[in-house]
Each structure stands twice: as C-alpha cells, then as structure tokens.
Length: 539
Image 1: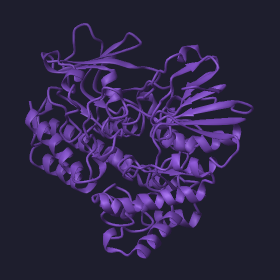
Image 2: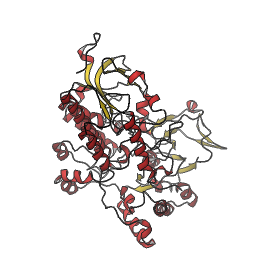
Image 3: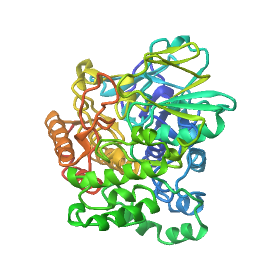
Image 4: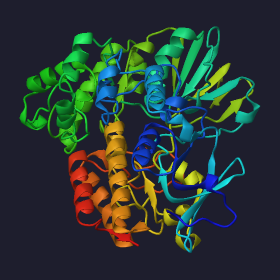
C-alpha cells in the first residue's frame, strides 16, 4: 500500500485509480476488486459505456458480430445476455454495458461527470497524485488509463464556424436526446465509418442532405439482420471453445467464411470474381479474407479494390457521382467500413455529394457552407470527422512521470510504449489497449480483457514479490516501437494516410500505432511475464 501523505485522508488515498468507465474501465475495476484493491474510477461522462456512451449518432453500430463483441470473463453473463442482431447497434451495446455495471455492482466505485486534469508521479512517495476538474486531489500507487482508443474527437474548426446560425453536432459527441432532422437541410462533413453509418438514416429524415467528401471510402455491405435464437444457442453451447478458437485469429475474432489461402494472383479472373461475389453477398469483414495476399501484395490488393469500385458503379446510378465515390487507394490500408445502404443513398434526388478533396471548404457562413463559388444552404451541420485516435485523450491530460517529464514531451516524436502497456519514465502507469498493442485492429473487448488480465496478474506478482514499482525500460520501448513498424511495413497499411498513423490530425507525428497480429502479441506478453517481466524495471 502507498504511504499516506499527512494532509490526506483515507477517503482520497487509493491503491489504484482507473480513468474511464468504458468496457476497459469496468473490467479493470472488477479485477481490482478481486485482488482486494481499494479502487476508484473517474469517468467524464454521466454514465458507463465509453465510446458507446458518446457515439449516439444515427446508425451507430459495431462492426464485430454481437456474439463475439462481448465479455467472456463470466460464463453466466455470456449465457444470460441475449443479442437481437448480427451486428449490435449503439443502444443495445450501451444497455449491455449498463447491465454489466449493475450485475457486478460496479457503480459504487465510479465517480461520474469528473474529468481528470492531471496525474503526477511523486518519486519520494512512489505514488501518483491525480487532480480533477472538481478541485479534488487523490493519490494512488497505480494508475490505469482505460481511456479508450476512439474517445477524443477530431473536431476541426472551419473559418466562420462560430457565425453559423444553425446547430452543429459531432458524431462522437451526439446529444443524448437525439437530433430532429425533419424538414431540415442537413450537411454532413466526413465519410469515414461514422459518416457512412449515419448518412443513410439522416437522408431518410432530412428534407435535403448534402455530403461533403474529402476522401472516398471503400465500404462492404454489413447485411445486418436479426440474430436467430438457434444461432445464439449453437454458440452458447460451446462458448468457451468458440472464444478459444477466435483468439487464434489475427484480429481476435472469426468470420463466417474462412480465409482463402490461395494468393489472388494465382487465381483466374473468373475465380477471383466468384470469390469476391460470394463474400460481398455474405457481408462483413470476410471480404478481407477473399485471398491470402490482399494485405501484403499491392498487385493482389488492386484486384479487390477494382471489384469494389465496380460494385459502386453498379449501385450508384449517376456515373459522375459513382466516380466521386470510388476510392483510388489501396483497399484495407484504412479500416474497411461496413455499410447499410450507403452507396444507394446517393440515388436519392434529395441527396447531393460535394467533392472537397482538391478545394476544401472555404468557410462556414451564417446559413451554410461556402466552397469556391458555391454556397450550400443548410440548417444543421454534422461533423463526422472522426477521432484523435489512440493518443488524443491521454495527451489531453497533464501526465507527468519521473523528474516532472510530461507525456507530451515523451511522445513528441510519436507514442513510445512497451507492449502498449507501459511507458518509460512513468512507473506504475498502465495503458489498456495503448499504442503498440493490437487494439483497434482486433475485437476490442478481447484485447481489453487480455490487457486487464495481464495487468491484474502483474499487480498480484508484484505484491507477492514485495515490489513497489514497475516501469518499462527505454531500450525495451524503443525496440518495441521499431518492431510494431517493421510488422506494419510488411503490409499495405502504411501505403495511405489513415488514423492508424495519426494522419487525420494536423501536426500529429506520423507513426503506425497499432500492432498487427493478436496471437503472437499474446505470446509475447505471456513470455515477458514468465521472464519476471523482462523489459520492465521492478523496484
């Protein structure tokens, strides 16, 4: 236990402080209690759920199938919860998060509507001092950042935006009461995943919709549908085996069609067309598994990209609009989007597409958007501009380690972690699904559970051995960052600008942040723990 400061009461001294009450924070709290640790969770929102608390925009939906996008740490929980759809929507996922919080009585240790402003390591006391926007200060031996990978919105401010007379909403901070689009002229800026999900629904409700697209996106149909009772029963009859099998896949989840191990370039044109058609009809990420070399060979990748572009031209009636919607980049270097009626939406007479890839948006006027000589009159502006992914929320806090070193300074050339779990010069600070871990390239809940279990085992081992601190070494972090980028360089991922590289945020260092390959990563984490936490310094 940390030493108590004379001016502090036991009420504000904790063994562990967890920042964030999404799926990572909830499970970390549950495990901390199992270890007998005095824990406190700080959550900026008024409820649990993290990403799924804030992303209430129309059409918000998970792109991992429901039976896999859920906790596996409690068998009774797995068996009792019933999912209604193949891909769960935001309201259902949020209900699930609330169910978990209630089922395990987690709310008692969560302080909502509280933003952590700073966390500073006291070297003399070997504890962290955490300050919040409520003018309160607490201390803890350990701090766990359960802040999520997609929790800090990327909200560019356009010239004149403050003068806009209508409402402005960001998909990542959607009003709890929703937005009424009926009879309104609506503009959506951004065609990433959130835009692709929201645009079809907004189009159905609005009087007129104008979509402003900087970069065309590849999207595969989700083919979402109700989940049959017998489908759930089949999985639940062997849930543990199902989970174990899924953990062996590169992304930590399985798909309804297995990987085709044939290279695309060894298949005939007809064979490729047949394979792509079958996977397009199935829907979901299974399209990425059409051939074994789509993620590593640019020539093979081009065959899949061409197929999707042809599909876009089949769906979209206006050839010029179809051309604007057709990407010319590598497919899969950005996260592949799953859609429900996205391309078809542009066949509506009340939907316009404005290409801003060359000219951009000049300014927001009081009544609309100015692009060159064109003024687009709108009543509601929706920013579907994504997130400052993986590092944004961490760097928004004033986090200081040894010798007052700020995390901003430590990461000025890009995020440096060891295993995505520890940061040099920041003892007893853990990041769940941090940069350098598979995180966003996997089933996030699977990655979260693996990280929380590793951290919990580490804390238990430290207690048994009498260690007070654990800290990633500089050498281990440097080698790990190099490894993450070496793995990425063997694939098509670095071939385009994406939020994996931080390229969507002006001025952000360009470093590939997630690690490809879930099973070898888990093996490495296990090896490190078995080798007395090799690469970490135990004090």
